[in-house]
Image (tube, rainbow, N blue to C red; front, side, top):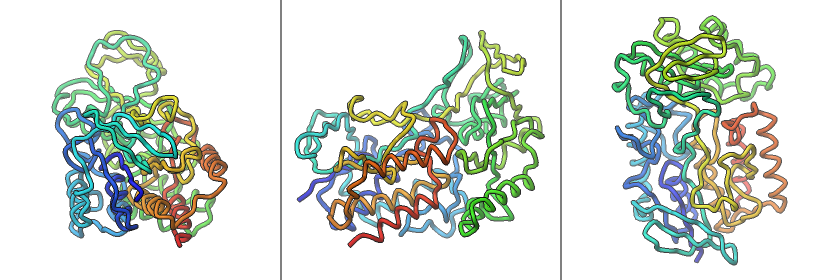
Length: 426
């Protein structure tokens, strides 16, 4: 009987277990390095594997985020908190009876492919186990990516957004947040509630998208435009943002000169409000740092007590040898359906994609596909190498060139591609 290893019991890991069981594959073990399920959604008030902070809420709406066959509770708000998300995942594990297959407090330190496409997995306690398939669901929001260019030596406090947990430590400080993505905007907004002065620095234009449009979550508005031809839909997105927001330059931010879906969107209803109320001050990129003094590319110079770098995360697979698979600094990640590697037919990644929406429905579909692949009910295409390259080339065409976009997908398009393959299951 085929033996299967799943790495990680976060949101992608637990749906992988569920789909394996539903395909009749019970000879599996999921290794989780922490003492509970939930991965990134296990909040801790101190630095940990998790990147969520005290006030984190999801940026995709409830109905667009839930697993395929397990709706979120009716009493959940449109944008649930991290605590509500964790309870949802815990209920999912209980409902599908997944706990017996998870080994907690167990870190995978090495995964090595051996003869016959099998896998030798070494655990943190030195124990080694053999598997026929390896499914990697370890997430990609836990290893910080620090600023590429921060010239000079900052003498104040420096931290990455991964380390930010709540605003209390910034009481009365002057704080610079570098990066206007979702984490950067959240940090700037929350810190501005207690700090003396908060600045947000961005190297280039970024769409700041409000969470609601016409009284409904914005992602449901986008979902209603799937039947509209792409050029018209793109125009309507631009028009809706102009109506809601106006010009970003009116807020002191650069105006984007590319379509809304060309970059990963920042979904935040408070940043622009805070800017216009003088609580957050936009600045361009950092030119130089000397002591606590920061000079920006427009010539502005200001002093700061703390810098918070909200500059994203690296793709980390520390259990693989760096000469085997290493996407940490990769400009392209050629995987078919964001999961299958052409050279390793018994390996699959679950959740190694960045959707313009929620990740969990897509992970659920990926897991269903790979479970049926292992069960012999879905066949891998013979030209998987070509398809993986086409997948990466599609990303290159669809999104701005940036490390943050190497695994970016249009969520509805991506889910449709997975569903087309699922329909082929015999």
